[in-house]
Image 1 (cartoon, one colour):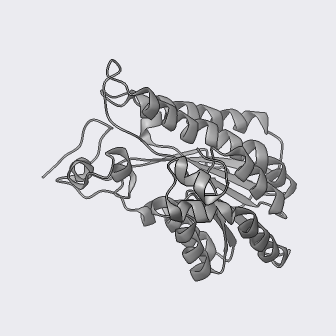
Image 2 (tube, rainbow, N blue to C red):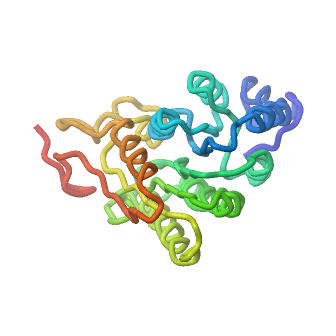
Length: 284
């Protein structure tokens, strides 16, 4: 993780020129976002979505915007969320959820939060415990667990203050099972799930609902990230079956968000018809 600085320092830290430019303009981008948010009518719900540059996050943004919410889209790939925010009439911010300064900057410009979607996360690699890559484990735990924790600590006061808040955390069926060569991801998702479930008890009696969405095989950029951009390896999990797509998950999130305030859908597991478990599926 790099701290916003001048282009030379950023490049020396391994940052691309485009990423360096985005980091250098971070304060200006947040300032512009604050002005947009200040203009959102008090009657319009504000939904904050992390990891909104593609996949589930982008689809969820479209779904909630279609319900009339003002969507605040955060991701490390700012160019993508900026384009999507323009399309949806929302607000884009550069957001690495493992960067506490960026999370704090986001919290500082939000007038309120009616819906928080903790979507950012992911997997790296697929190795046995004995062959574990510590840096891959570190990335998965920092992104899936600590990143979600940063977002919750910063934004929960505004979610509760909304008077009728909703927190949706997108985990995985990997939070329910352990499978060979997946312990880095499954352990991180188990931890993220427990974090979310704990909040359900700690905020009991407060005006906020909590829903955990647990997708199975869904074809997004997830596998490309996991297998370091190798398209052949990324396609193998979906071979011989029809996987979920991002819109399938987004529509369920939209359903959750549209329920009356006394209805809490605690946990929803979503899998393709052909998938029985993390390790078992029917393939043609």
